[in-house]
Length: 115
Image 1 (cartoon, rainbow, N blue to C red):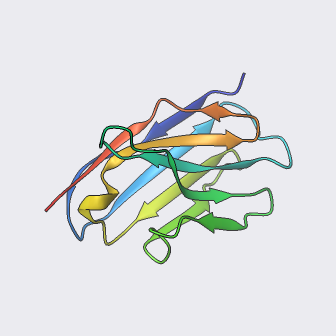
Image 2 (tube, rainbow, N blue to C red):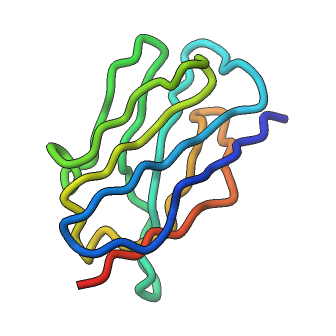
C-alpha cells in the first residue's frame, strides 16, 4: 500500500501564498495521476479537484484555482508540490494528496486563509 505524506498547510492572510508538498512512499505506477483535492469546512461540502499531474507531467487544474495555483514534480518523481498564490478565504479547506485511480489518499493538511 502506497503511503502519502503531506506537509505545508497552515494559516495565511488573504493574498498570501503557501506551498504544499506530497511524497509517496514508493514510485507511482504508470497511468496514474497524483495531485490534490480539497474539502471546504462547510457542512456537506463536496470534495473538489485542485490540481493533478499525470505521468507525463501534464497538469489539470480545478476552475477555481487556475492561474493562481501551480502543481509540479519535486526532485523525486514520487513527490509533488502545490504552489498556491493569491489565496482567498474561499480556498480554506482540508487539502488531500491522492493517487488515482489507485485511490490512495493522504491524511490531509489544513489550509486556512484569513480575511
